Image (cartoon, one colour):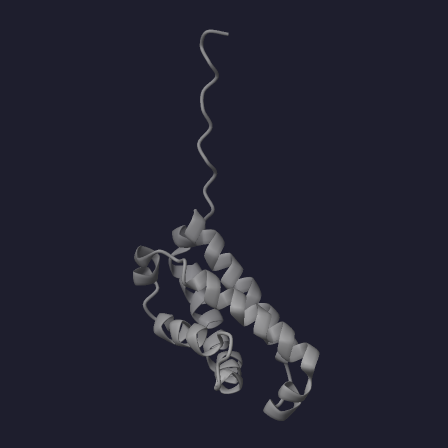
Length: 127
């Protein structure tokens, strides 16, 4: 259930990134301080939660570039020299590919994306 929630967060943040950057060229993106900051935050959400996904779920989604997300997390960290290039790579490559594969996997492996409710406990019998 936790992994399903993590995948939902990744998907939502990815859609936000694509929405914010739709139609923008690289120079326009980097000249827009507010858009760049929000996209950086959304990509940060994606890298942060992707790192918490279980190894079992990652192995069930092999087409997703988990190593690419780990590399992006390192390059987008504080004080990074190549963060602009890493952010643009995430915007134009990692995010769209991730969303595409999540759609494929959602169709083919819906059980991974299902948030199953916590089983309820039976009423105390001594009441």
